[in-house]
Image 1 (cartoon, rainbow, N blue to C red):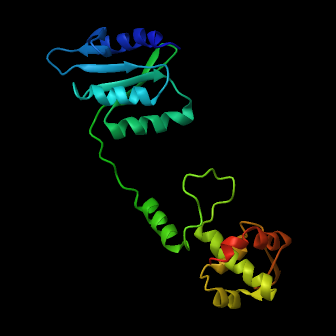
Image 2 (tube, rainbow, N blue to C red):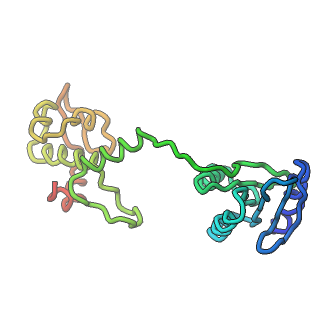
Image 3 (cartoon, helix red, strand yellow):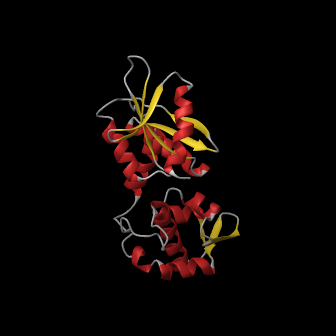
Length: 218
């Protein structure tokens, strides 16, 4: 869909709401007026882009009622684009088969903090030993999380001392969540040999070699 294909449905959409609509006024793709109300500005692009977002932010110097308009994106992208627009105080219109849908209206952004996500972030930060990952690097290798570090502590003990009772393992490693780690066995490193007693699997033994450098720091 071309940018010019977006204009007719957007014009009809605004006119049905009582606006007078004109294209290419100054630097704006679309300008709409309704009585003495502040103007509505719409910037058209075939798809979302940084350039479009920057244009929208620039137009906010002229009016609070600024919309970005794009051809309807893939469904999984729509929520993220709408969230970005709301954060910036921009509106969002999408066009699909000549139908215009308003996914966000211009309004001051008042974010609500997600206390649960903040708590998880700080908990991971506090429990992770050192700084074992490279920021910004592609995650071709497994991310070294605090959970993985605790699992490696358990694996190291089992690799050295053999099958061990959970209580003894917890005391020896200092890993308070050792029971959950061995019972859930997320990485396939552990196996139960009898009630309450766990040993290392061949995959767990291989992990001790794979993560030898990380183990040296925990």
